[in-house]
Length: 203
Image (cartoon, rainbow, N blue to C red; front, side, top):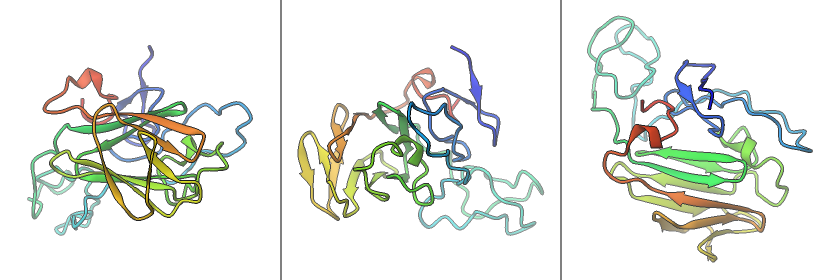
């Protein structure tokens, strides 16, 4: 299989990946049949809740990786520097591509590219809400999904998630958005083999 690279940061990614997890940029994808929805063009970066290190306080350069302990531009120490996040990653395999959620982050699932980094995966499904559900993985690797008041519902293993409620996700669960979009959950524990990840920022 040919190795593709993120057009924003150059890290290797897999063809089925929808977003780059080094920089958070949307990855180009081949259109699906009858899919006239353009790919999102907004480049977004994961920012951990409460992380105010988006800019170096010494020189004002954007901090590309929250795990950096020094600014890559001025080489000055960054306040609150932490170790690189855990490799625990939640992966949801949808028919249209994989959605990976690194520990300590969240991803909105829905059709609106202004709100969801992975909107391209759901654009062809009219019954998926623009902001359908949010998948979260805390720093310890605990994964949950919350329905965001979707019109047609979010389901875990066939059970409806009430709007605003969070339901824990474990390895092997199946989630469904509305009637048409199902995804299989995998949640590696510990230090997984990097080759089993999507090679997007953790290699």
